[in-house]
Image 1 (cartoon, rainbow, N blue to C red):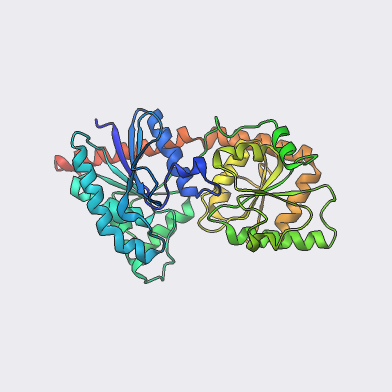
Image 2: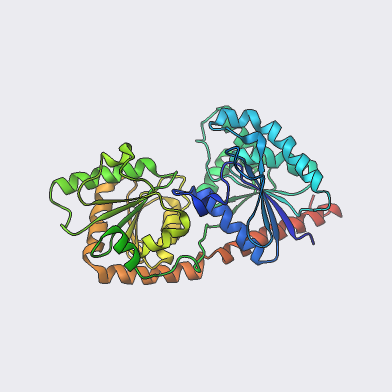
Length: 396
């Protein structure tokens, strides 16, 4: 059996979370998946984008992983420019694979529609199975060129992996012939676990744990909405005098955020993903204002760190936490209730600690990267079995 896999993540370089703040959930997911698959004995090559001329052509990711950056993607920003580059990217990817020569891949696995635009033709040219993780889906009535392309990708992929059942339903609504499998996201509990809050508290000059808001590429608008509500509540005297909201991912220099700040907001600024565990440790609870497309990774990271979550009631977050067990779920876009529940947990550290301990148990039992890797490998095995049956004329 071939022990090497080819993953395609053009929009998000899986090494970015190590050295950049506000890492996208896609980059974190790909990095964790690649490392976990390696732990099961698989080498993984990842095709991604060269975003600057100084990016190295190749990098190492783990003991059996490599990052290969395609030059044809340099400077691409919007959907139209990415779509225009797909043919050139595919040609460059095929050339690289053929130059490798001796390497034989078991399958191709892509993330997001841009990557699928290369992975599909690549898999067909190499006569390999193709697994696709769409991450973001168009609305059912959308008829843009991108939406048409996404529907075709969902139909042509041998398997489609989604993070929750609501997204599975949306895939089927877009393309009834799609072969969908739900594999929830996960975190590494050897990285995210309870830690001493002292170092971060001293760095931020806080006398006690605060409330944490992590701003990522996906949640800018709901994060601003929460800050707006926090600012109004603070102005009305509803925030306890020694309670602080710690904002990670942006700084006070970002006017689109800082305008909604106030004396009880601490701007931690840009924090590399690898340093986030310390900030979770310094929180009584974490605010996760979710959107429809969230993966729920921030909630899982917080729970694995022993810190409860106050989150929006969207499918991805409902899947990884339970209200009044590991934190509190509030109606989507109800930032007022989110603030009230966060302050209530801050005022009751005993309850917060109980929720946090329960959150650790849930992550350990259900949402580890090792468990996720095993589910993905079972899906890969299913594809192998289906291919062997087709080869002998069974199941057609």
